[in-house]
Amino acid sequence: MTEVQISNSIQVIDNFLPPEVFGQFSCQIMGSPSYRVLPFTANAMEAINKNFIEIQAQAMLFNRHADGIEYSDAYELNYQGIKSIKKLLKIKKLWQMRSICIMGQNKSYQGMYHADFPELNLIAKPKIAILYLNTNNGGTQFKDGEFVKSEANRCVIADGDALHAGVWQTDTKLRFVLNINYEEDKTSYRKRLVG
Image (cartoon, rainbow, N blue to C red):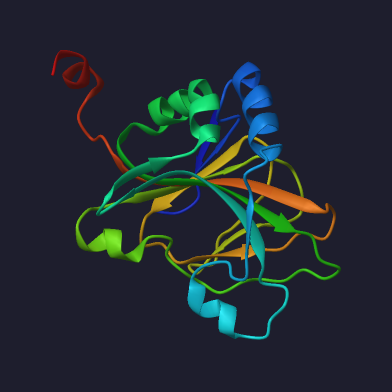
């Protein structure tokens, strides 16, 4: 695991999961039959614009909302990998985990800046983690100027209110990312073991 702090609020970790965990986990998530095509990338309001590039497919693995918790078969089938991710990110409360598949384009394109779960910022101090599942020339552009390229098993972590945008790839047909919104456990490791 190689960690780089690229700004005050953005951290990049290469080789995030152990190779034996990442290989199986990424193959299963990318091959999931449960992707749903959406006519937007950040929020449903984008569906009204005529930008045909802004389309993606997503598989919701876990979603916490006012009515309860929903999780998919993919969440259960890949629980060992998810358990490793939760431990490495020190997740106290998971809010949302979804896999996103972005279709390649002939020209690079950057989507709209957005925060993933803006309503969560009203009740908590959330974090976002983006785990890239395959390597390509797409990535994530942060509004503060930082660009993080999609490299398999690279994880970028930022504050939940960090404005960011997807950058479409031109060298692969599909780009896969795992997007995680969560609250971090800030207690010490020793305190977590005892308490």
